[in-house]
Image (cartoon, rainbow over all chains, first blue to last red; front, side):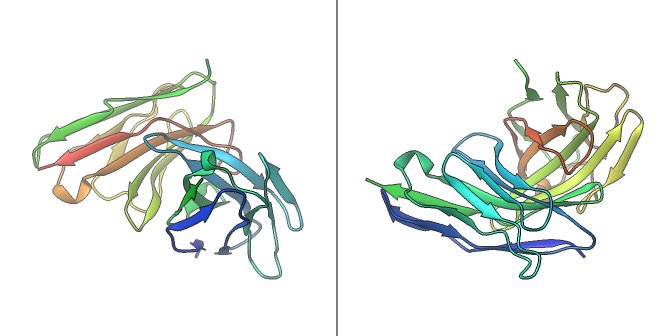
Length: 110
Length: 113
């Protein structure tokens, strides 16, 4: 079946630190991969996506590369800001369905 | 403004009392979906719809119904709510299928007593 496993949180970093949130997946066929972000009290917003192997998605300084050989889609940012504090969800779509990881809460302290 | 709206945003009800959560999008999207978000479980898909009159089960459909009579609306119906349906619910839509960017509503927080 299809599933997403992402790094447990919460994660607390100092401003300007390097961020990695790990995500691995199991899927049949050729899924598309996503990172969504949820700010407190809001719905999810797309952060970035990749639709095929070796694609790199990027947005707002965040990056993730679709690695078929390791079935991974790790999220990285070189220098986090306080405004990046949120919950991050890794997700995949396969067929007509969508599968989310459990979410990783990130807090960035000044 | 392009958006997905949900109503109500907060709801407290009692076991067995039928309720409907409405979802509407103004982007002419074909694909719509409902999710529930629970601590430690992330988001799980309840039902989705590829187009008008086409709906299908997601991972956790038990206890829920949906309908898609118009393209813009996708209500979620709980015929006989139970406490294990206490959760945060999100509606989402995308242009044509699940692999495209989904746009989420603000969420509906439901408490079933």
